[in-house]
Length: 207
Image 1 (cartoon, helix red, strand yellow):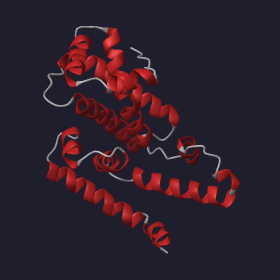
Image 2 (cartoon, rainbow, N blue to C red):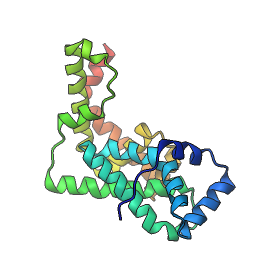
Image 3 (spheres, rainbow, N blue to C red):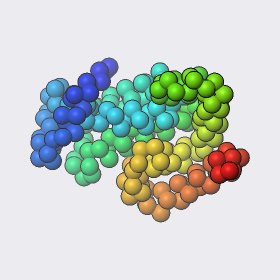
Image 4 (cartoon, one colour):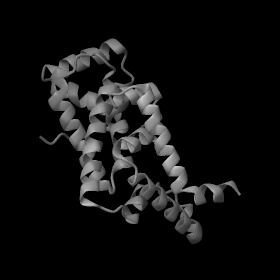
């Protein structure tokens, strides 16, 4: 069922709720309260969209991933048993959606498109005053995206969760449903592969 994303003010209000109120909101949503679910979705909209945009090859795919995540959250909500933080549980579902997406992409050999990267770049107007800088920035972004797309799915997710979502290693392990050691190893391997793939960019930035 299509679930509309909540407004930004709903996100801010839900995020500011104390723990007991948040728990009561979850219980109300589990009992079928649509407004309670909308507030819960609002509190976690930003993190889901950030992860989806980091994984998707175009903005439409990112929106679809976020929509699918919230649909799965809605359907699985009655099974949530407060055994972990609700945000971790949502991350876990978003990660599973992302894994499915990356596997489909790899199977179909889809290519990342430079136009999608431009859509994700903030339009602050500064790059437009320097066409050469804008072209270089786009090329670097394209190289980084392509390097990320070549990583195994779980390594890429570990890297995304750590460096783009800012999660601690323990939380990454919980989201990926593995040990901290395995998560750390996935992160190390991803970083090593990216350094090998983007070594010329790193060297250029050091000069």
